[in-house]
Image 1 (cartoon, rainbow, N blue to C red):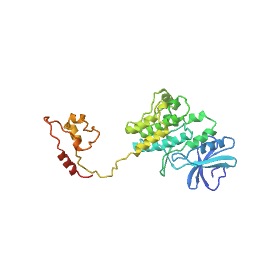
Image 2 (cartoon, helix red, strand yellow):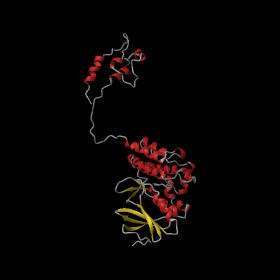
Image 3 (spheres, rainbow, N blue to C red):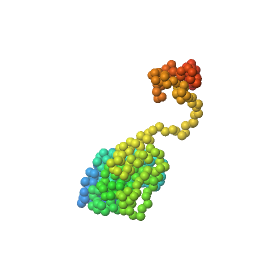
Image 4 (cartoon, helix red, strand yellow):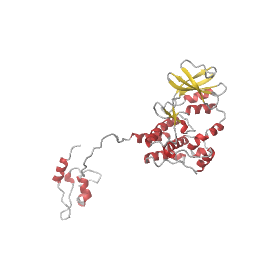
Length: 340
């Protein structure tokens, strides 16, 4: 049905062939009820090196999991997760909450890659898969990208062919010909999130034109103004034009995770109206009924402290046009306040 040189065991059910960059092939299959991709390489290329590179992928919900590998019919193969889903639409103008959720998941996955010493180098909106059956977004193309780097002999020609997809998210130093780095990965992810949050994808007539504008500083990625300040700041820290000033992937994930973890008001809860009484002590401070002498004598706390007891509060000296402090009245008011 789908010709290939592999003689995979009965656990695999081959469903079709997928487009593949580089030599060998890419098969869509099911194994133990899971959708997987099987990347295979002929013996004439560095297939074993590619398999070893994929086996270095860390276990993380936002990264494809390597299922297995082996040698069949003199070919080397490796299988990894390939769930059903849709690629991220960078022009969708997602709400802030969704952008933060995506950012936390993807930055966490990117941090795991970096901790394993792996640099993506070509992050774009098409790198992000949104699974149809729920679960976190995935940097799903990293497995195929690592395999191609080991086996694709076209090198820069392959990167140039992918430039139309990657250039809107390219870090300025990469646009100037610099090597891929962890810092450039963070920039690219930040640029993807900015685009998805409402900035959109820049319009360009040719990839090299936008690359020149990025590298020369004529074009800069800016977090959308419609996003809340906390999210704009998190994204701004990712897309700084200076690599040394960017947050790393782990810090970016933590920032968006902590922000999302803050308590939120449940809009379905009923609104309870309550009468708020003025704090008597704060009212005294505001009205000036507390004497400067009492404050200087050490009997009064500062504005941010509470008195040890109400007897510590001294009133103004006699003769000043202020009402005397009535401690008994204050105590009666306090005792009559409803218990929360």
